[in-house]
Length: 195
Length: 195
DNA sequence: TTTATTTTTGAATGAAAATTCAATATAAAG
DNA sequence: CTTTATATTGAATTTTCATTCAAAAATAAA
Image 1 (cartoon, rainbow over the protein chains, first blue to last red):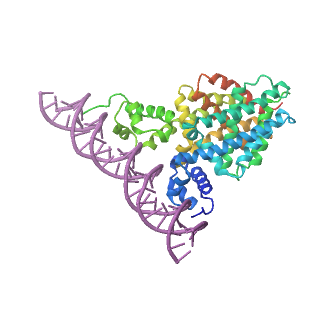
Image 2 (image 1 turned 90 degrees about the horizontal axis):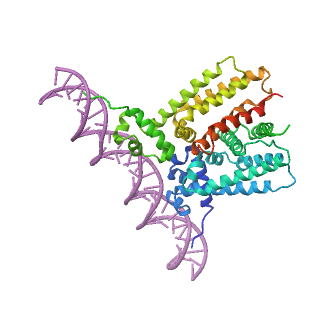
Image 3 (image 1 turned 90 degrees about the vertical axis):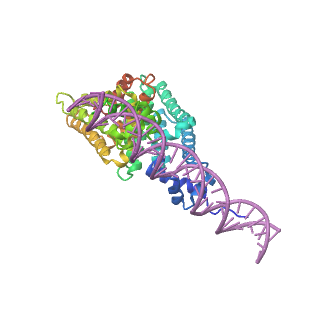
């Protein structure tokens, strides 16, 4: 018999994240990923069905984590809507905080990942729905202006956040997460708080 | 002698926009573009160096247009900063209004286009700089709050706008440009106007 | 040690597409 | 109508990689 040395499956996925982040999914070669993971080309196919499977596994891991965390936050009843919104922004940033490469793959390959897998589009919608729910609650409680076009607004904040994460991932020193966190919350709140 | 019938060069570029928008740059085949333009595969190479050249030509055309238009707006002295900001949003949306496919290519292939061509990154920076300049003027005139982290803010609004354009291009009936225009201006202004 | 089992390897294969180019078609000029 | 110059074609060529798989290596059990 023979047992597996180390954790090649994980090594390969991490390598894929690095290589996808650096060159983009389509410009990444399987042999580059293998090299980055210090395994042979063929080993990639022992653990993953094909190149696309690698991308899907990355997204599956990310979205399920994002969704679970967001659900937790949205269910904390002690928080006001605005506090929830802050917490949501924080969790979103926290998921990526340790790993700029992962953030880059997430923002850059979303479309490619969703092309054959509708499940990611559904995650995305469910994610936004959850955020929207907290906002709607806030409207009922009078914390948030009533005449807010929610359909536009949720795309507005998500797009803004996505772009900031992207900038940070490209140059973490220049755009610190703390600075993004602080300012983002200011920008969105002053736009919607009832005064 | 033989003269050129029609304008194949333009036909091919338009076809490329449609095909890139539909399948994404990397999933698009040259023969699909040729077919869409009603020419032979080889003709594409008469007018364009290669596949990447097609993408670059699309971006060159777009960015130069965006930049020229933005410069015009930024130089209208009769406008207040906030009016200028509105006008900038309008021009950005106007450039794409006639052509959802072009918008899709712009938002989806930005990274691929910039990968070998630093010139597009420069355009992007110059574009944001121009917008920032108007905002800074507004701060001096007291129209815009003084403690605005401009570096974050400009990425914030550009990201938001980019995502809304993207949604619109994917389903123009659902996210009408008018609705985006109206709400976007509301969101950003209530966030920065001095009260 | 030897054998059996599983993991790992990386060169060989095959497919897909980008690109080329010799052949063909067409319009203008003579 | 013929010649000439240019435009257009699309099959053939080439390149690039993803994927496969037979062989080799590593480990555990006998």
